Length: 574
Ligand SMILES: *[C@@H]1O[C@H](CO)[C@@H](O)[C@H](O)[C@H]1NC(C)=O
Ligand SMILES: *[C@@H]1O[C@H](CO)[C@@H](O)[C@H](O)[C@H]1NC(C)=O
Ligand SMILES: *[C@@H]1O[C@H](CO)[C@@H](O)[C@H](O)[C@H]1NC(C)=O
Image 1 (spheres, rainbow, N blue to C red):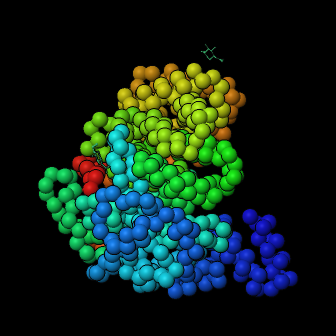
Image 2: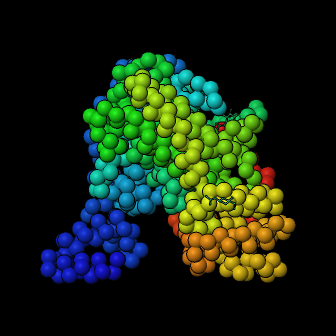
Image 3: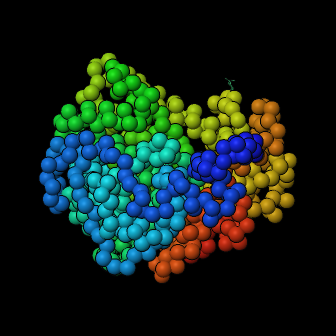
């Protein structure tokens, strides 16, 4: 980095200030060097827009896909021959407030200066009250399998895609409002989102990004005083909550269910158009003319989907509702609802309390991802020849082994180990640790973190461990603990790893801070009273989840969840 700056300075002295400013921006935007620079200066960066009026959507490519001929916005259970319906957001009518914005998303994705978020135009824009002339707002028609069964038409019931933006790095992003009112796909709902679920989505999407896990992003969150009625726990007791809107970003919002509905309805023409569009726009490395392109697309999506599911496993994330419509065709995490991070380790952790069978529990996620891929493959059958179908089926057969290997590598890395040596004994090591964690209710996040904080030699000394952290002592109370540490030490020696390397690797893959329910809940309760400081602070902490943060420590973000947290029920109504 230093070298780079010197080069630029040299360049400046020759070519003058204009070039410096330009380079500065690029640097700023691509490499987060703003930490080293004066903020005020950069907010005036010529490439970053300060005013919404100076910003516009790029030309929409999505509108080239089949559009609904019905122009009136009313709920229809059976829309035909369309991938999108053109629908305007419904304005919010009361006082609006910006809860928080993601500087990184604004700068690096939207080429907007963070100061833009403080303008009333921007807040009105997110509320759906101010439509840009460059925007063609769309609601997407998709279907999906819910809890194992075909659910027919679902679709964007409260999300509206405002348009597409090609940023200064040449990436194409889709901007979507969540909670912006009814669409033809709203079914019985009001198309709104409440503050609590919006805060959770906003914080978790950004937190996942900083954890290094593919995800949709959240650029900003606003709240109004427009009332929304919610039966939080489906017990017939409704309360009035405040309507909120998140500006979410993804390079594509297409889902497995986007293809499924077209196949189910025999709209094969549209199916082909959509899949070709996905290949051209998002998987250009697959030739658009290649005869085998659909198989290649499936192969890529399948691998990426399993990679994603393994990423969830490695940080203890449980999505909670892995219906096929909540699976992104780009294999990024989408649709944050009743998600949760495993705390006291329980392989059957189920964040959605109504999911009694535990279909979407923590440890089922790899299996469910494969099940969902099976549904995606079926949706693609009409595009495939016999032999291509058998190629797709053999890709499917391979996914279990593939994900097992990925999972093994991810968990070995969590233990500071770099390579697979012996599948049987490697799996045994991981399994034994998880079993002990489960039996001692050790915390998923902190156990790995604390195992990496302490030299292996000291890990063997159970007595001194009592002074180190709060989760490891639990683990160390297990009767097999010492035996495990010995096995662990031998394993490290087998790959000739040093303890320093082990600890370094561990602190880079094991986060110290994840969004625990109590943290979200505490920030939500303040936000309900217009105090957004905690939402904003949490976002700051999650920017560096692998690094110790003094202020976060003071606030107890790496401590055991407080007692009151055991009473939190994450409501599914959102
Ligand atoms: C996931 O899918 C279901 C429909 O299958 C939908 O009701 C839900 O809102 C989606 N998202 C989340 C976060 O649950
Ligand atoms: C939680 O699980 C129940 C029962 O399976 C399901 O009906 C509900 O839709 C799920 N919640 C969400 C948000 O999807
Ligand atoms: C892996 O370890 C097991 C148990 O020690 C041993 O039986 C097996 O032969 C090993 N496998 C390989 C491929 O080395």
